[in-house]
Amino acid sequence: MVCSPRRSNVFEAGCRVPDIVHAWDKASRAERARILHEFTARFSAAVPLLDDELGSWSSLLFTRFTTAWRLSYSLGTSVTPHMLAIRLFLRSAQSQRFLDELLAIGGLHTLLDLISQEAEVIERDKRQALVLLRALVGMSDQVCNLFCQADGLRLCRRALMANLGERTQARAIDLIADIAGRPSPANPRHQLDAQETLLLLCAPLSKSPVSCKALALRALAQVVMESRHPRRTRTIPLDERFAGRIVAMMSLDHQQIHAQASALLVHLCNSRPELMLTDVIIGALVNIVNAEIVLSASSSSAAASSAASSSPSSVTLSEAGGAVGHTGALDKSPTGKDSGAFASLSPGARAARTLTDLQPLTLSAATLMVDRGVLRGLTHMYCNLQSYEAQQIANQALQALLHVLPDREDALRDLMGPDIFAAFSKRLQGGQLYRVFTDANRRAVREAILGHGPTTTASLAATTTAAVAAASPAAPQDFRYGFVATRRGS
Image (cartoon, rainbow, N blue to C red):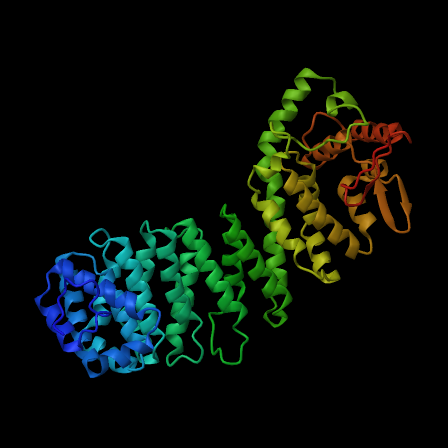
């Protein structure tokens, strides 16, 4: 049967392969595009049929597809259909032969040139080129070495600096991650270069988009967490510099980056004790938590000065936020929900959440946190009314610390001062610290911590003591050392 490219589908019409090749040679550009689409539709779901139906003619058809691919690329037309067809040949039983033919005609360098173009190539072609490159690199160590020696990692990183879609970014990150986590590579130097590329991509000062940083950090975390696998040979040095660079990523305002950075830091502390990075990581996180005081000092000072000019020197319960029976100390949004649900977490809150994930928290780690002054930062964060979620995180961190420390009451007494601490320590039952924590208490502790409020220590102690004494059995407010649990009377 003589096949024509104008038939409905030359691969399903019972045509002989020589006739298909002849139809390709006589076809126009549009007809060749249709033949490529029909080829992909025919064999994408059943690659073994490619060898059965094409037989020895498959190499001849592959040569025509690759020649048309390079010609179309040089003319500036779309080459995605060609690369989809080439990908199917590389998945067939004769994939090694097709790989050798593709490398012989310079196919690898064509793909690298394609992804390095900025505006001349449409993004769909770049995305498909990255998919094809990943398939080639995964086929043999030889191709992986050729890719890295041809500066492929740098070209991928430069492509990610452009304004690409997330799907294209993911394909590029997957390619780099395959090299970074390649088991038993022929050249470990290339593996280390790929890991360093991921680290550069997710650096806070990198020009790559935030979504790209999140993908790179996820890939890097997976490589590091799997680096203890017996087939893994080498990783980049997991030292203090590496830990510091991961901590620095928590300054980025992106939820996935926070989660991945936190998981990686917890892994380095809890699962890799031989690295001895726990003290370094805790110290860096505590510094971020305590920086909350410095960041909010100017705004709090302005608010305190305004309150001092319009109110007496002592803080009354009404000025502190309402009657003692009112426990809604957390700001509410106009919709009635907690305002923290709509606001992004501060760097201190992110660091505090990571500190709470260092479980089980050892006594040495907790002591180190206290020595670095973390109680001051966490208590300040809890007393800050701007974010409900940040207060909850600080609450959890304080619970974890106070549960481990043997002298937790002494630590709080040193932090708050004996007068204010006496107002909070209503009673001790079974080693559990109870206290009333109302709006007046919260305001008093915040001003005491910041050290620039309009009141003195004596007036703060008097105010908080009055708040404790005013708590009536009819409206009991029982806040445990977590500061949050509340019971209301009828």
